[in-house]
Image (cartoon, rainbow, N blue to C red; front, side, top):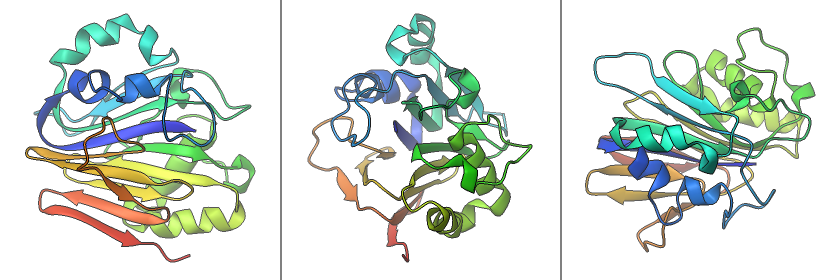
Length: 230
């Protein structure tokens, strides 16, 4: 199990989005409030974002706990972007513990984070997966089948592994696509953008829950939430 968030809107610093919230990802790395499996997310972290003048996203990933990375904390205030995806990791038992297994994963266009677990044996191996961990292999399948078909991809995987938790967040810098399968999520509309997260980063009453088995899409035009067929 992991915790993750995605931001789309006016430029904000990575420190603002990841480190400085009262119950943001930094706090969730040791004290998540809505996590149903695992009690900490200390097996690594990752941040991906889109920089002006660059088509491909950039990433900073680590196998350390987020609270233990002083270098990132010193640089995060000057990393600014309109689209950010970040995650803290609680590794599935038996999965690698190196930074290549930390989200977000990418195909060069999209960033993807997986919050949950899936039996890797139900996923055919892919040479383009960034790691042999379950989340990276799942990401490679989502990229290969197309983000616009992510609901269909998740339903197929869930049919093969009914106990899987397949909560996803993706962004290509112009929109966010999120999917809840196994756990709910939430989103907050701010004057300058929208954040979607596995759990709220504060106690603001404007947070809106996204129920399990729903798809959320955020564009500059607004937020759409639709139920997924079982």
